[in-house]
Length: 317
Image (cartoon, rainbow, N blue to C red; front, side):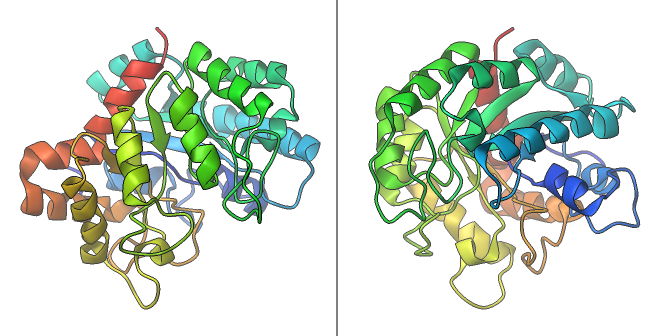
């Protein structure tokens, strides 16, 4: 199903978590990864965000240890073959995509591992991390998460983290951040902001989805919202399919999102998938639906060009 296709970038998948916790091999077809190597090839994915999520039942220090192990796994078990090359700079991004080289970008999900120490952020950047979601569902030293009963917004340390990420050339991801913290990030960030995996709350009232005002705020930073394949973020009950996801894309387009919608599958972080987006190999089906609905120009932006633009504007040379 690969053939000629639009640029395809997936802004969120938990491949490394499953490789670590289930002892799965990225290059083995016998395993159940939604996004093993062959499924990335089958899906024509040019750039995959490899998320560093350590799980929810660890101390912050244990999370850091787990993240460091997954970083090693990324370089040793994913990139050492040369089939996937890491994106560390704008130069890497432009070169790899221009030459048809499949690529991976490391992104942390939840900044608990920083433990209130900005030096750890700098160390993780030195290890190749180029994006970070500030929280997971519970809060941390940076901000409250969407599951917290209270929402105090960004902490003083959290404001320092956003500023330092902007300085380093790291992508700030507000996925999972509670609403006051979200608006604090919009206020203090001086670079485009992303939400790597969320849909429109007006269509599916889940706490992880974004209100129309939040969607427009991300768009106004020049950032991207990655529409996600998580079924209960698409529809509150029942089976879901591409047509249901397209409703969220329609909503975002009406809010001015043409240059600000991307893909954030959350593959390998979900047990249930849309009926016709079962794994990475099904991604061409989504592209076909987008081209049919909106034409090549808009479809190309959603499938990858919008994420590429944001990365080009943030990553350093």
